[in-house]
Amino acid sequence: MAEPFIGTMYAMTAVFAAAVAVWFSIRAYRHARIVKEEGVREERAELD
Image (cartoon, rainbow, N blue to C red; front, top):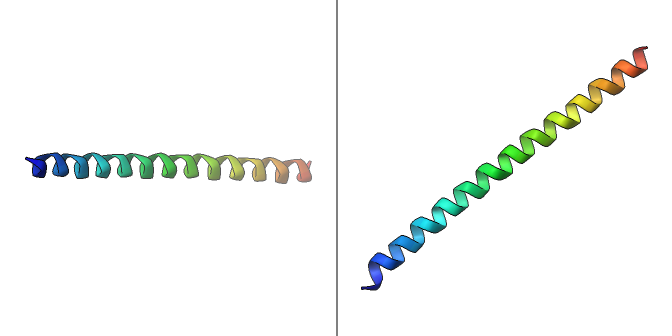
């Protein structure tokens, strides 16, 4: 009786972990893009 429930819990935990990993990777990508754009703006301001 408990085996299907345990399997379901493992599956739900795996899906949650995958979702968190995707969320953090998207967040890191966006942050890196913002930092890069700020650097480009500073370089352009120095050239002007």
